[in-house]
Image (cartoon, rainbow over all chains, first blue to last red; front, side, top):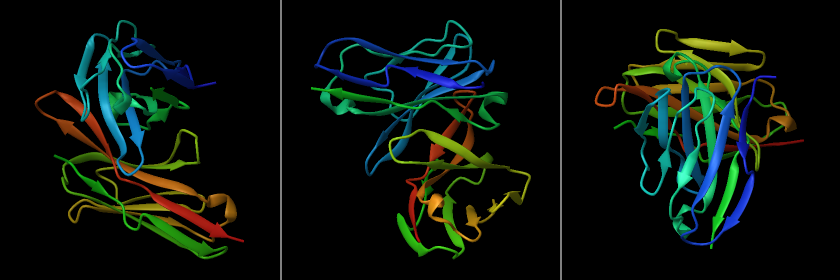
Length: 113
Length: 116
């Protein structure tokens, strides 16, 4: 089954404790991206990747890092999480540089205390 | 910078009525426009994707139109059902020259309630 998986689905952590949210897709898509969704602010793009070793900032990259060492994986790294990073995070993938249908993961709900 | 707006933010209709959801965008140089459905606490499901060269796309009871020149897209849902209750989001894909990459910008969504 074609899908985008994210882990963990739920995470409660404390300020400053480094964490990684994993994202993996099995559709051989080149394009992958991360979004955060906040009430009243909608979905905002954090980072995107056009292909392996090619990443770029979205609208709200501050406080986040990403890497794309393999085509199927696109982890989101929070080196020193802060409470304002409490949010619902989505990973998505697509082919043709994002020009075709975007497939979204189920989301990761992160709470930073 | 691309900005995408969806008005109204919420909509309530009786079952059987047709739904009309609006999406507007400021930069008409888009690759495509995509409509998504999001159920509470869940991820996004793609409904329809309209390429910039197309005027509309249809899937079952859903029909989406695109007018690039006016910066508008409309999603029509015929004969609404309670199961159509969800939040509907539109998103525009734009090429970012500086980054040589494609960026997806979302609207704030329209929350739809279809009453039995």
